[in-house]
Length: 125
Figure 1 (cartoon, rainbow, N blue to C red):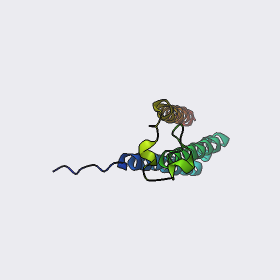
Figure 2 (figure 1 turned 120 degrees about the vertical axis):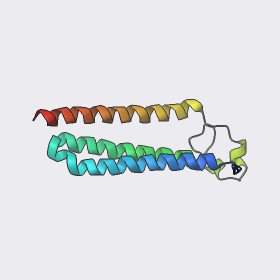
Figure 3 (figure 1 turned 90 degrees about the horizontal axis):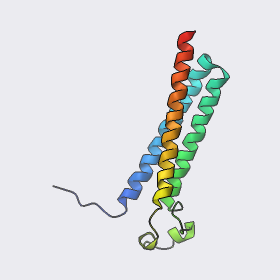
Figure 4 (figure 1 turned 60 degrees about the vertical axis):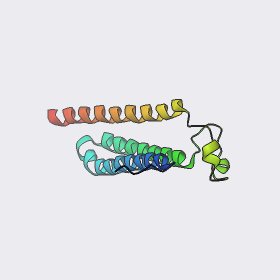
């Protein structure tokens, strides 16, 4: 038995996914703040701080997507004007959505490369 999908739930699921990602990055950065400085010194603080900034960016992205302010031509007051406002609003620009995903993926790769370099540095000691 298939449950019929209610309109608009995909937006909420996407927003929740962005929030989960932001929380995961923030928790990982806080753990890194506890662990990395002992191994990498000042570089450990820098990596953790960048991770926290990235999690803030992800959280703001989730908020913009949830509120509809990330859509071109839709202001925050238009998004809240009526329940039908989102039905008549232009769809999210796929270039904008793709840029956010690409930025997130590139940042994750940057952190992975940093972690690999840190691993090699610690292993050589």
